[in-house]
Image (cartoon, rainbow, N blue to C red; front, side, top):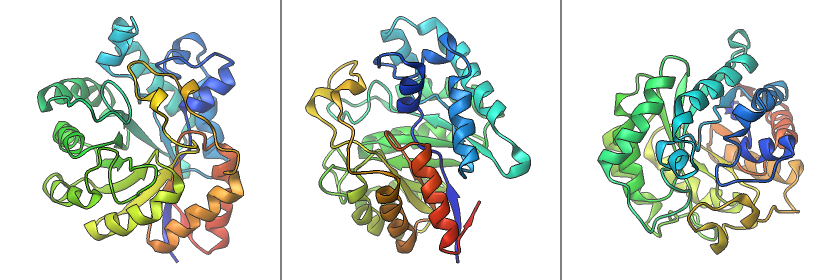
Amino acid sequence: MTDITLLDGSIGQEAVKRSGDRATPLWSTSVMLEKPGVIEGIHRDYFDVGATIATTNTYAVLPDRLTTAGMGDKLEALLEQALVEAEAASDPSKGNRIAGSLGPIRASYRTDFQISFEDTAAAYHQLITAMDHRVDLFIIETVASLHQTEATLRATLVAKKPVWIAVTVDDSDGTILRSGEPLADLKPLIDTYDPQAVLINCSRPETVEAALEITLSFGRPCGAYANGFTRISEGFLVDSPTVDALEQRKDLGPTEYADLAMGWIAQGATIVGGCCEVGPDHIKELASRIRAAGHTIQ
């Protein structure tokens, strides 16, 4: 049997639902200052149902995103609040760990522009400096192209903690990134920059099997945490989008999601969890299924 790392699920979507606020371009970022405790409760709920890693609510806490939203002066306060809420929910004596989330600069899924290596390093430097001594690892999330892969991996070379990278693949073809570039072309970059794990995230769960066939050949721990959207719509691929442009699936309950995730584990994945629209009930069911199959959650 296998040791499985069980990630949490959606943070942003859960925060919007629990806060009762309408989604904004910064998703759940401002809720940390306006309604402290909401994010802590989400982290705690995921730990309570079996997750072993809390992902900090810093996906959109990036200088360019905050400046665009008129919150450029809130960067330090938001980073601190995200760390405080993750730490408050975590119990290291139970094996709980905290992963610092590093989201894409400017916007998710966008490959029609390229952020330079220098600008990526400058943006990530502030987050890494603030979080490095308070998290157990970093996860670079929702990487959509080869350029983004290299830019973000270069930027995280200064981190003292382990770095995992999670890439997002095409909604209908798990063998290609959202940029249209072959997923297999990641391998030279993975070999060069040596992240400790390669994951598939924020992609349709049905595309993960094909993606894993490729990433498992990279020679390091692999896994996935998929989303629960019908697809990434054209309405989301604009400047300052909100999740109102995306539709939640009605056919992906906890049982259906766990069926798919257990298939990833059977393929060889050792890190699983959930992304947007995958909540605590999904992670609870997945934890139960992992244990029932004789695996150990770590």
